[in-house]
Length: 171
Length: 102
Image (cartoon, rainbow over all chains, first blue to last red; front, top):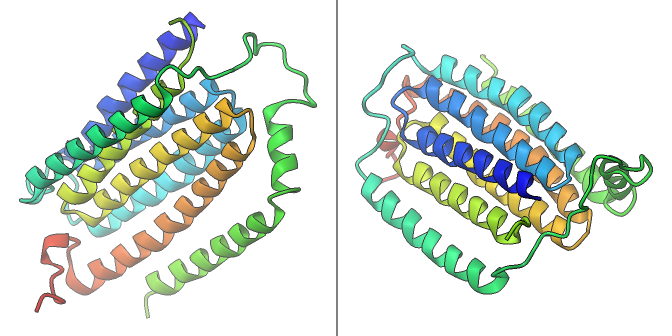
């Protein structure tokens, strides 16, 4: 499991650095591209946790669809693309204080509750039975126990699609 | 110490969550605020998957998929609203959207 630890810290460092750049970058397009790095790192963490179907969905939906939406949003709402000095408002000090206090509370609670709990992952995930793989179990759960929430999500996506078209339509 | 700990993932999620909260508070551009909300939703997803792994349950992955779907819907509607604001006011600066101030 040493290799998994090494890769965890590698991806975690990449994600934290990129997330900080997302909220501090002067160029809005750079912020969007750093967000791609955070989302890709999250997909890598899902694979470390043996949730490969969620990782694939993350890449398809977030990096594929949501980022294209963001780039469209940036290009439709900016007159000029480039460096912009006033992307951060005057309340950023309050933001830092809030974030640090929140992190202190959460870190204390997490360390207190789950100090050295290990994740009981399989030691060797290279050989996995297809019938017991993560994707098959996920699909069984979605179309079995969670069928009603899944249908509700479908209706929600349809409603959001129609709502976005109605809002953004020109007339 | 050569095993993956639950707290590694939970603390990573907490760090990303706090960075996202900072972005929501400190950014002026509405699109950047939406990006910070995506950071927050991703940190929640990491937590869900980690808890699913530690309990040997698939429900964490299923809930993470639902969160991803809801986030996609949220971004679609949110960017449509931002676009509408831009069309009406020619900018998306959140500090200047103060008509409701008494």
